Figure 1 (cartoon, rainbow, N blue to C red):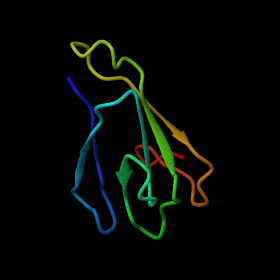
Figure 2: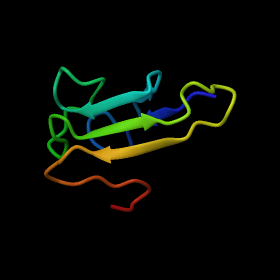
Figure 3: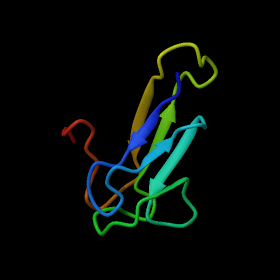
Figure 4: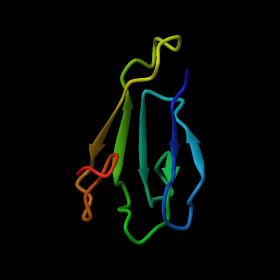
Length: 79
């Protein structure tokens, strides 16, 4: 198993990002791992931590950390 991030809204809607590292930063900056150039996204918006990265046979367990974004972060429609 390997997790993926699917962009659900905005200009990159439907784009899939494979999460192939223990820590992945998402935002508008060209210096992040997953670039989402959208007005509601901060330069460094969130970090996704792939907690059991070293155990690929297990279903992935990931956590989202807001990096101080101005608009906040929602996971499954929850802040």
